[in-house]
Length: 320
Image (cartoon, rainbow, N blue to C red; front, side, top):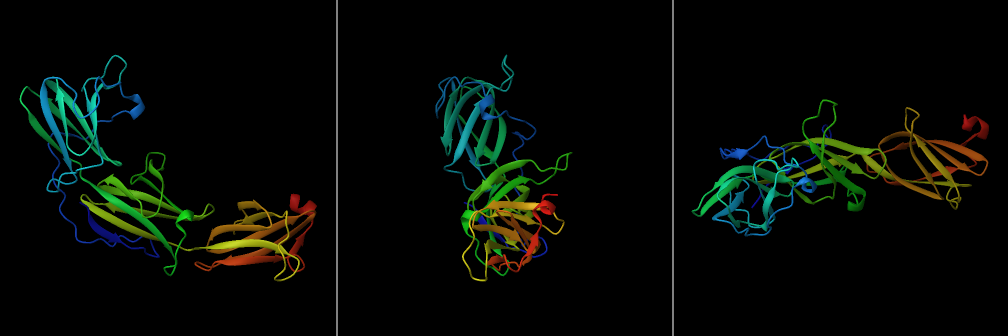
């Protein structure tokens, strides 16, 4: 159903937009409602009937496509049929719903708003039901987005340490992008309306973050891979090189600006850091030690802070 479009990473943008040839987008149905803001699911009025057939008078069959010339979507759709005028409580009355592919409804003659959702993609259309059976089709103008990430040089990133968040492409008046889909796992396909989205890739939980603007095209699966310039670092305090890690150690990692970006407690302190220079501070009992380190992209390593060699800090001075 979805044609594949592969987009590769770039060291300049963090994610490249190397697009394959584009198909012209199909024209939207003239009856598609594009400016309607439907309430959240919890705000819908309770339906009078629910399922593929809400008995009334006229029969109408609803179907949907990703593009105007694409095949009919046969599964994964959620249909909701509303009365077009809000009820006394200000909510649009939901009169029927169905799941799957094409759906048939029996409704009382009149005007309705139909919303079809396919993942995070969706479209709304105004329809008129009469006594005669009819068919209406919605064109979603939607595609899929599959996200992944690699280390600089193509190194593998453990999937459990990688997450994506998809935001609206245009920032609001406050300069922030509205969140659409949080915590997307690598290789998971997110269905979205065609358009440009702001994607944030997070490797670990500290500061390895890549931001990219990626375009989703109708009827296509866009595969985007971003490149992280970061590494996994494990800190340990030892009395001599290669020695046993000292338990009950408190850790603080400072960036070049002197801001604390990570704190941990334990003999070992594993973390993912973006490439760059850092200052590591280890505290054990009444002793505080400091060491400057440099993180190189793709170079995972164990960093030893050797008590006999690291710079010792006066506890009272460190408290200031």
